[in-house]
Image (cartoon, rainbow, N blue to C red; front, side):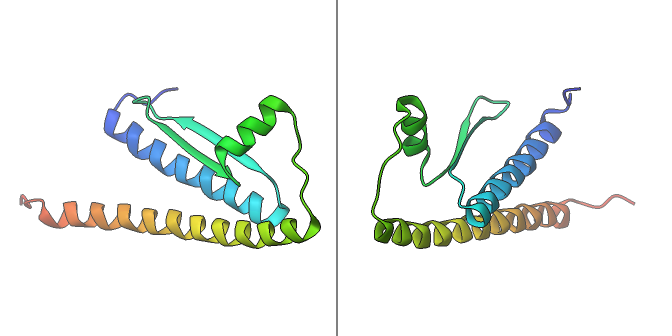
Length: 114
């Protein structure tokens, strides 16, 4: 059932989106999977995650062409991909911490009624 309160809907969407992106990033780093996610928010704003990139994977899907690379280039790409996945996980964690800090800030600035 869709949530009726718009603020709760947006908060839930943001948390779930971050969770999906984190899981996709883990799948990339742990299983060497190629993943692309495109998610539209309730306000129709697009969010995407792609490893190595959304455009690369969409083009690969549409053309069904598997690019060939030397083993050395695949090794280098794997290293870069692992670093990108780790950075993306850190970004998601920092974003979640930022959301928590914003909520604390709002709570601290609210006038108390007794």
